[in-house]
Every structure is written in structure tokens, then in C-alpha cells.
Image (tube, rainbow, N blue to C red; front, side, top):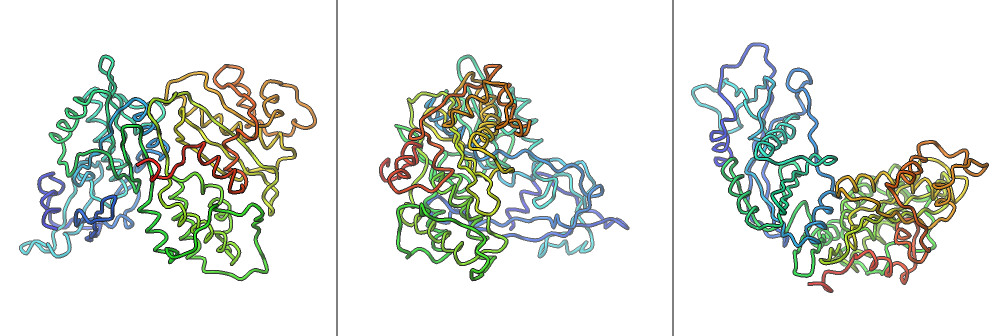
Length: 489
């Protein structure tokens, strides 16, 4: 607690003043936390003074609050890019990062509980910089960090404003920021050393080292490639829901399962069910093999029944069988941008809507995937496939802009959908399709996207649209380079 308050003094965060009449003063409180490494060992005990930001009033205590946050696929994109270009990634942690951000509003906070000034117990602090808990704190820190890097010659990514790039001759330096956590790497190791020194000179650092544990992801940078997995998170999840001694099973969902509202079923604890779904959804960030089953179960959170809970527990039993599975990003593979799209037809038993599935790879590195119920009811398989191709086009264009690449293929296993993008004729089977799904045709005509048909057996997105038997499930899982850590390390 003393160390935290010393940070306030060094960063000139606030000034003690007499309480102004009629001023709105925000309360403060202490938050205590144990920081752990990727093995679950406590590495630091942390005390943080935070403001009770929920009592702030817009227009008085804060104005604009939006701050860009890196998408998880952007993190995977960077890891895949670094692995392919043989770049070692590092991470850094700025000590009390938010205390470095300047704020423009007039904000008063109460004195820290237990550390009131004995001579001025009724005085309050006027803030010059942001405090954790304030609504504008993330934005203030991002602007300070952004302005500092721009001043040092960095440029911001065209589509991802949390990505900072600097090119010198033939060398590249990249930096990705996620709130107050930062990842960086370069094709020249000397630039990483210089960047660390530059940051330490401007900000007080608590850690700079090789990237090993980030946002719950365990990351192993090996000579042959990089492996991302969440084994610690998986084991903690199983223990939390008392499934650590359950019987393992080989697939997350049975092939014959048909989930519906189950009106006559026995109700279960909604809080428990939602908690399980929320935990599993975060695990999907490195486990595409459970994406479909988790998303199907997530549709019944408003009124979960025993049959739905049984389906969720089967996913946990599958995780018990495969706790160390993750994403393998090999070095030396091709680096073309490739997307696979697939859709079932009227698979939802409640609304008869189809499920879209897609996966997007940089060579052999899977960086983005999705499984989502479509917004409208499709009248044919061609329409269902065409809709998912249109939405996947937008994802590929986002990745293409980031990669600054050109002409990468999008693979779709429905021949009618492929013909629709090349044939502008509207006929009875397709004239009802919403205009928003037709923008893929424009990009195909421009040459931005190449749409090709792929056989169903080679359709990697199949795993995101329907439950599969063990043989096909394991085959597709391997094709996506979703491997077990024990086979790599």
C-alpha cells in the first residue's frame, strides 16, 4: 500500500486541497490481488487504490471514455506473424500504467482509507492524472502511450489502432497494446533492447521479459514454432465446477444431439449455468475445437434445463480428456491468407435458422474462427452458404488490410454459393437474399477475394457448424493445427 502511494507521489498524480463547496467528490477504496505466473505460483502481492468510478457523472467528472482494445485475434495474428518471421516476442508491464495518463476534467477524490492526512482530514485530492477505476482512465493511458510512440517515429496500424509499427531499412518492429499490457518484437533483437530502455526511461516498469503468460494464455516460443494454450485455466475451470474427477470423453458433443428449449425439462441454477458458459467462452480463445458446442449451449442461458446442463458437462468431460490442447504456429510454412466457410441448413430446432462457421489461417496458423447462428431464415442451402461467405469476406478484408497482402483465396464448399458471386442473374431461388450479403460479389469482381469450391472432406470449417463423430472431429482438429502440448514440448 505504501509502494502504491509512493507511485502517486513520483507520478505527481494529485494535489491535496481544501474540499470545494458543492464539488462532487468520488470515493476511493483499496483492492488487493495476488499475481500468478503460468504455473499458478504467486509472484507478487499487489495493492491498488481505485476510484469508485460508478459514482461519476457524465459531463461533470468525465467526457469521452472510449479506448481502443486489441482483439484477441489481433494477438494471435501477431504471434503467428512473429513465429513465421522467426521473431521472438517480449512483454512488458508498466507499473501503475493508468497513473501516467493525463485527464482534462476537474475530478476530486477522497483521501485513501487508512492514509488520511492527520492535519487536514477533511481535505480532498484534485487529480492531474488518471486513477484506476475512473471511466476515462483507459483512454487517458492509451493517448499518453500513443503520443509517446508517435513522437518516437512509430506509425499506427490502418485498421488496428492498438498496433504500432516502425520500419528501419529492412527490419521491422511491432508493438501491440492491450489496455496496460504490451507485447513487442522485432526482426532485429537490438531494437527490442533499445525499445525496453526507451520505455524504462519514460515510464516506471515492473517487468520486461520474454512472452510466456499473457491474458491467461500460456505461450511457448520454441525453435520449431510457437504454441498457445490454456492448460492452467482449463484445470482451474474443472476444479471450480467440481469436474476435476469426472470421466473423460473423446468429443465435446454427441453427433445425434438436438438441443431445444426442453419446455418440460427440469430447471437448473441459472447463475451456475451462465457462469459455466462464460468461462468456456473465454477458453474458446485458444480452443476452436469446443467453439460450436459452447455456442450451441449458450443459446439457452435464459432458461437452462437439465438437458442443457448435461451438454455443458460433456464439454467439461472432453476438457478433462484434452486439458493441454492448444494452437500450434509452425515456422517456415507458407504465409498466404486463407479462409474456409461452411453452413448447415436450418439446424436450429427453435427458429430453423442456419449456423455459420468459418476459420481463417495465415498459412498453417489458425488465427480466427467463428460459429454463429444466422440472423435470418434461409430458404435454401445455397442461401445459407452465400450468407456465411459474405460475412467471411468482411473478416478476410480486415485481415488482408492488416497484412497488406492481396488476392488470397476464400474457400467455400457450396458450388451454388460460388456461382452466385460470379453470376449477377437474380432468379427465384436468390432474389430474396438481403442486399447486404451481396457485397462479396463486388469484391470478387474487383479481385480482392478469390472464391473457390472445396470438397466437403477438405472443408476445415465443418467443425464449426455441426457435431462430428470422433474420427472426423479429430481429423479436422489436427488439420487446424490444434494439437496437444505433449506432442510438441
